[in-house]
Image 1 (cartoon, one colour):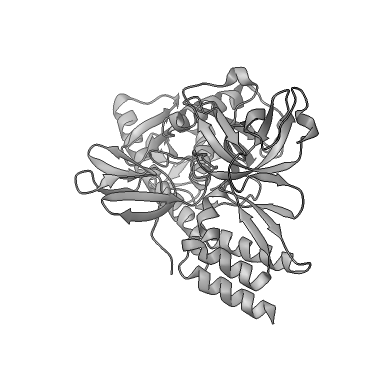
Image 2: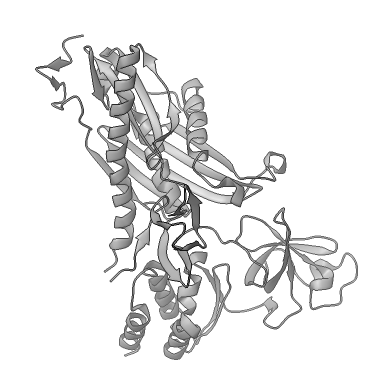
Length: 220
Length: 235
């Protein structure tokens, strides 16, 4: 079974009967879909949940970033968004002398960070002061389509706990589509396979049960 | 040239208001954010969309909106006589009009300072490549999840042996009197591209536009089916 998929320009409702939510627009008193996605009605609002597209950063998102450049008092971080993000020295968990940023984070290294500020010109600033933020020193990182992140986590993290239960992996999902896995030896492949299956079947119903069945069967 | 229309039937057996065979497949490339493979008569076209991504060098960035940068390219083996590779006057023009046609439906203001890159690769050409290119690029844009007002679609009409016909073949394009490619936003019938080669009377022009819009709407259905098919494949 498949949920209702809409395309850009699909008529959704008259403007009076519903409110135009995310992924929609109003033209001549009618609500249309702006993108390819799944139709969702929540309360008065009519939303389109995208099935594809770039990561759109928003304040408070926890993301996995790759250090692109260590500047004198900040780092330039790639967070898989259309814009690079800046992590200032004062927002890092370390006490750093001026010009010594590269001692703590070098280009190519990875961090978990939270988006602190976005201005109207889409300049993004990160912080590493809060809870899950840290430098990533071991494990494995995979990238999925950012629009599929909510499916990998599931309602109340149900999907994630299923994968964790059957593979014994430690998994952290960044909102930007990067996933950090730490697995007991041979289970890594199975965990990645499950995540890839979720990614390609994200628009279908009953996915958690199918993933659970797949993991149970494969565990022997 | 010999006769191109005999007893109301064209050289390839079509009626004047009939389209060539069209096949569209969405999401064919793994590395691109969105892609489309399209066959339209003898045309074979691959379109790929990347972005929105950071526009570089920085001085090309627009702080108010995204840039839409389409690149139309014909493979050297796409025509009967080998085409010298690289951009030429014709492909530069088509790239420009394609960018502008597609930009008209994209919500560019949602992604300031970025660029949306569209690559249209003509692998095999048989008249009407610019229409086929826009049609393929539109599917690739929707596949890439780019917010748009509508899925644009293009189709050509023309005049052959004094008859207004839809979707010209190579023989008709070369031996006919006029070619009129248009691109529209099918929901509003807003015209996004209109070019004309040859001569038409005002009456014939109106007739050709109407015919091309009718053709484009048929192609639009195929585009939508192709996008839906991509997500119906899984169980």
